Length: 141
Image 1 (cartoon, rainbow, N blue to C red):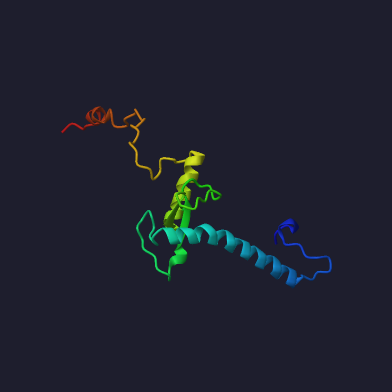
Image 2 (cartoon, rainbow, N blue to C red):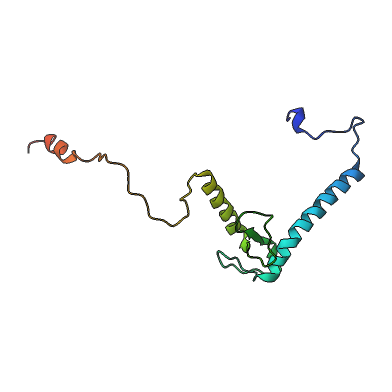
């Protein structure tokens, strides 16, 4: 059982006000729908229903899998011409954010990016004296 601070708190009388709870949930859903319908609906009207990365095409049946990505990662930057948006499928959108967070953290920032590989930094060759060792241990015939 989680510590008492992690559980939802109940009112002192032990009864939940279901009407108030339903009102809070409905309001949160309405606000989320309002936020999402703004730029998402505009992007779906402006751009074809195709992932800008992998080229996967979408229909009304699977349109819920097409997301709107903010190119500059600023969700408040929503110009009406859609210049900060691109439609991406769920998978490409996940990859784009994973790549961005790796670059920000600096961890594995080269993963998935095309660039020249660094020369190997190892200078030790474990087989450098192998021939000499084999010659010394060679049994006479």
